[in-house]
Image (tube, rainbow, N blue to C red):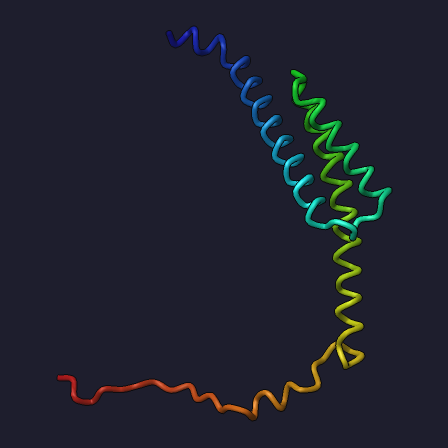
Length: 130
């Protein structure tokens, strides 16, 4: 029984690697579709098309028996989505910076907020304990 397990160890390792690659690819495709839908019109049409093509590539390669091919398509999808995410977050940060009253991003009402209520940090000591 041990010799049988040893003789199939390489095949088992390959099957495990293939299953992991497929799971990661399926998850990446699902997450990309979900986030693409949530982002809606914030994504440019060319970038959306690139991501949708990458999702289709990943889904198409899931039936492959080559884990390296699956990983390559998954990496391509993640890279395309990462590029779009950076652009969206950068645009959001620029909008937020433009909406703030201070040019350096500092809030001008910070001192007023502190004077509303004074917070005292204290420790209670019970002298009656024996």
